[in-house]
Image (cartoon, rainbow, N blue to C red; front, side, top):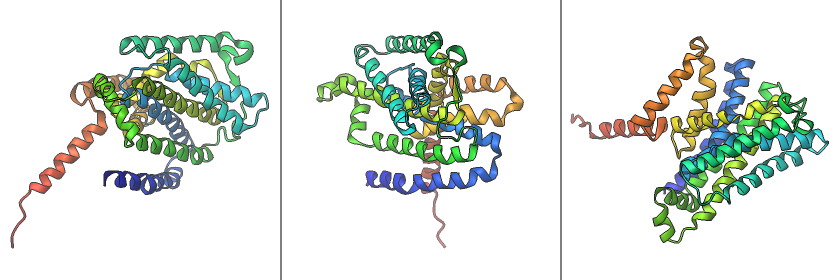
Length: 322
């Protein structure tokens, strides 16, 4: 029954919400805020991808910005070399996924802060290489005038491209978490020894999570290049990964909806609160601390608990007998 409900939500509800957003957002937002929505959608893809490792798998990875950069640069360099757009895009995603596999396999024995430090070091190396290899990557100035899909700077057409891509990414994430494979991953997250005793292949699952997370980041990298028309190493700094980590913590670890909520709060909402200037991020940092302490399952988990309480109280309310 639950699987049928999930399938109905993904097959009917998700396309309906996507279509509604495509119709409503251009009518109520100007070009500037539509651009911020597009940037937010790219960050949703990054948060969804990171959620596979951190939320579903319970592993700490700080390499998401590096995977993001690899996908973006492979796509941009191939396209500027004359490779067809679709081939360059697939190569960007595949390249990020391959690097995810290459990073995940050697770090199988690492966990906790050791894994975090290893992935952070990898992210630092990638950014330094992108800066140092100026003859290939353009160095600190980056690559300018990347053709993309010819929609750079066009906010409304890019919205129509990004919304279905993000909806597909969200749908795959939700389908995964409710699938038998997703259940095995969560079993591994909750108790690795018990999962291994039950015959679950932990090594393969861990590598798979890295590959899936890197693939999402690769798609985000391609989308970012198409949106902006340029890339530079400072976009993919190691500090960015902490932003993606904050998104999924605030929204709710292990929740696809939480990744969406966290990205909106971190990217879009500050633009509505520009009058607070830099104070907003201080408030956001305080909110992260409070959520971790008071609601470890994030805003989505808090919302679900409040909803259950309200419905429980409504069910217990005595019915007046005429």
